[in-house]
Every structure is written in structure tokens, then in C-alpha cells.
Length: 538
Image (tube, rainbow, N blue to C red; front, side, top):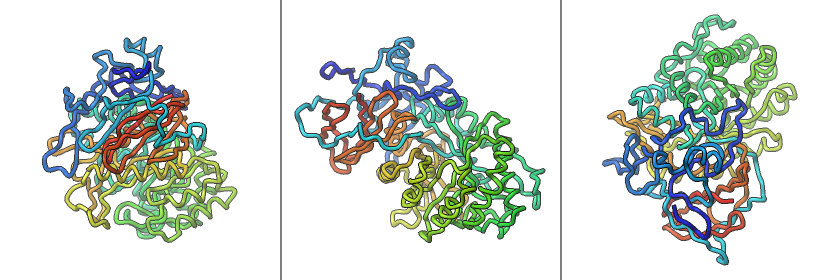
């Protein structure tokens, strides 16, 4: 560690940064780790340039650390990564943390913890953190589980599975606090299926989650074993085919008769109940992913009237009658087609007092940023629940052979995360947490999508630049924080429950020294070219 005018800068990554943990509703601690030593996750982030890859990818599972990348080293007594700093750290045999803390990432040099941090008192600030200007309450970051990801996860060695989970959910990695679960097949299922394909089974007598028990549920339960604090929510990509006008998984429209809508409400209810029996509590249900779109993978369009009737007359009352604890969000909505269909659904549901009495929040997909303004006045949680997956088929740089998983995607991702948080969302979800190195899903159109972690052809785990982008945010920002204002530069900032301030800066140009005014201090450091810096201070 190095000293800066009486302040100690710790030269290892400490996920909690001395921030106080907010207790999760289920009573679990914020770090949620089942193990007292998760050092494998930090030490695994050794980084190499993969020959032939489109961009930097870091390897996981190595016992070595290359290039001064700053992994966590608990074995050397470096720090306690979970819970409160100070007493908790001392009890674990490590020193208490003192802030400020600085981590930087740039092309080929991710997660550097040895950057020079200087006192800049008297110098003009390039970026000012307005920590007194509190905006929305922050609930957390998260990602999506899928059956296909569960399959790739199962192909890893036991050690690498453990590393993957700690990198995503553990206190030494992203510390994701939310997870999304598909109800039936998503676009990243192994193939198309629903949980009740018996036509006309209005009573759900043939409802079954046996298929999910093969790949999806083991993946989810493994995550919960590492991080029992994770909050889970779910949505269908498509209802059972017999509930749709086209009787197919892809595309089509939802039938609107009361018998079908009641059966679908029962389908969602049974899902929550059956997962709950397995110790997987579902806290939120979004009735349909992108109800405005008919796509070439599991999907379904809904009319505004059908969605209003489902929530107000069937799903809401059924949850209440059967004492289902899951809340109902109006989501997940997008504007991919820019046709106004999502706004029509929002208008219909929000103007119906009965339906809105059951709606406890809103969820939007990556193309739905402009929709946030339509619901801000409702004073309910607003989630960005599906991050831009990148490598878009309609872009000139599209690759049909493999997902790029490069630094350019991380830079693009920063723009989405920044804009959504500034727009007022209270949670943000990446899409694919784990994929193979190609990244194809079920769609008829070839679309290799990016991920945070990649299982390569040799069944080894790789870390992508997007992983580090999300780590710059999720590793330091506590649920229960508030978004705070910034001026100057390209930055996001949060005030954690214990008063510590997290500032994340992006530099789109060449490496440059930047002065940040944060917590009544002015600090100077270099932000890498096309890179990020996370500064935590009091």
C-alpha cells in the first residue's frame, strides 16, 4: 500500500471499499458469500491477450497474476473483502480500509490498482461530484440466467465453476445482487419449450419444471450457494404455444379470451410456487418480455387491452388470493420497432386504477430509454432489465462468425449504462452472463452476442472487457446507495449508505490526468485511454 498525506491507498481490489452493507430483505448480508476466503476469484483474473481474438480477453483459473493487474490476495492477509471495514477486517486478520481507493482499466491493462493518486488541493476540478444532490435510490446490478448458459457452466471444471460464480456474484467479483430467470424458453435456451405444452390445459394439471431441473436450476442454485442475498425475478419470452394465435413459440400474438388469460395467470403463479418449493424465491414477475414485438425466437405480442386485463383481472387477483409473494412489474417493454406499441400498453395499464393497484414497478429493455419519462411520475422502481448485447446484425461492423467480446463493446456498454442511470432507473441488468466463444442463440437470424464470461473451446473460462466495465460499478456501489449528480467529464457517481462516495469516470481520448472533487477533497490521477477509473472516497 502507498500513503497519500495520511490517507492509505490499498493496492489490492477490495470489493466493499469499506462501504457499509445494506441488509437484503431476506436477511442475508450484502456480500452473501458462503466462504470466508474467495481469493480464487481475485487471483484468477490474470490477463493475457488471446491470439486471434477481436479484443482483450482475460483468462480465469490461473494461480498467477500477470501484468500487475491487481487481483485480491486474501492469503497474504491483504484485507477482508466483505461486511463492514474496520472491526470486521480486524477480526479476519487484515488491516482496516482507509479511503480513497482507485482502480483503473484501459485496453490491455484491466483492473489496475497501483495508479498514482495525488492530492490536488488548489487545482481546478475537471469533474465535480455533487454528493449532496441525491437522485434515485439504487437497488443493484444483475444479470440473466439461461438454460444455454447453464449448459456451458456445467462443462467447466468444478474449480472454474466456483470461480465463475464468485466472479459474478461473490464479494470479490461483480457482487451482482439480482438475477433474471426465463419462464420457459428464452432466446438462449438449448431449444424451444414451455412449462405446459398440453393444449387446453386450463387448470395447469400438466405444468412441470422438470426440464428446468436439468441445466437451468442447477446453475441458479449454484449461484445462490455462493450468494444467497441475490434477488430473483422472472419473465416469459413466450407463453405456451396453445395460448397464442399462431400456435408457435416464435412471434405471434397472445389470445385475449378470459379463459386463456386466466390459464396464463395460473401458469405464472405455478412457476413462482414450484420454484419456491426448491428454495428459489421469485420476488418479481414481468408478465412478458417485449410484448410489443414478434421475433424469430421465443416471443409474443400483446395488445394493450389484453395486458391490462391480465394484470387487473387475473394475475393480480390470483397472486393476492393464493398469497403469492412475488410483485408484478409492467415489463419488459422496449421500443425496438418505434411504433408506439409499448407506450400504448403503458397508457392502458397505468390509466386503469384496478390494474395499477397491482403494479409495483416498471421494466424496460435496452431500446426503451425514451419510455422512462412516461412512468417517472408514478414514483415506482424503474429497471433497465436487458442490456444491449452488441454485435447488432444491422450494424456495419456485425460479425456473423463470433461475438467480438472486445473493448469497443465495453465502451458502447458504458454509454448505455450511463444514460439509463442518468435517466432515473434504480437497477441495471446485463444480458448474457456466461456464453460460449461464439455466442449464438435460438434465433433464425445468426446473431452472436457478447457476454461477461466466455467458456472457450477448451472449456476454460475467459473474462471479457465488458466484465471489467460492470466491475467498475457493481463491485463498489451498494444496494441502498443514491445516485448523485456530477458536473464535467463523463462520469457517474453514487453515495453509499455509509456515506462513502463512488465515482466512475470514462475517458474517450488519450490517457489524461484528471482532477476530481469528491467528498471535500480534490484528487488527481490518470484515466487511461478509452478507459475507466473508479474512485471511492469519503
